Image (cartoon, rainbow, N blue to C red; front, top):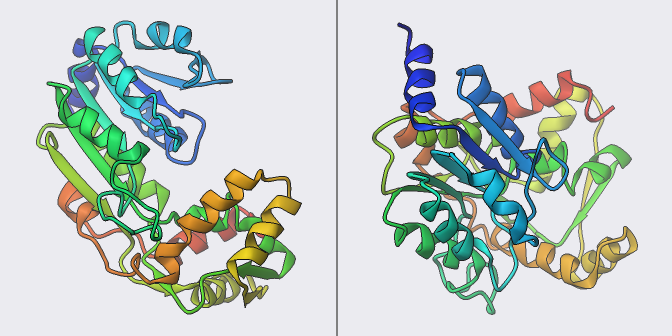
Length: 292
């Protein structure tokens, strides 16, 4: 029996894996990897094959019935429904929880002066720790994929990326690495009670990021450093609500302050290898033609 067969057999004996946010950046990657391993997997979202809506608790039980493990992609809203969901999951027989949290949520002021550690991610972390079942917490920093399938994509394509990040830097994490760690925690022993801080192997400023993309594609986008008010206004003009625009602006503070720059060891501890370099992400994204 191969390692893949053993993983599938072990998980199947326990029950399927439920992946919330199953169509999102990390969720769809987790679903794909679990299915490649032969693990029965439920891809759950409001419009996915397994219906799941954080705002509609009547959808939770059908998604949870018989599940052995859950990958939790929580809402970044307060009050958070994560605690109630975890209680229902454990009552339904789930024995393993892997929570997608965020880098810095346990550091007061990480996302600016108003950031408290008791926010929605903090609530979720406390809930999994108190669940009484095996749990693993993932704390990734900024995703590399924000430049290829996220809020920064249009700016890169249009040749100008305006952000209020100054000369700050971040060790951007590849979402593929996040998914690999999540799948290991969902299917393998040895990850219970672990908190994995996840980053890439080196810190880059926004101008450095655009240089990396230009080297691979031959198309250079300019980085324009703007103030926070202008950035928020630009998001609102794109259709974001005032609240959403403020959340994005606050989320950028750890880049502006370079709090996202230190390299973390979570990928190496979880997988026994180094995280993917940003250049590897750029090469793969360029091959798919995401930047035109």
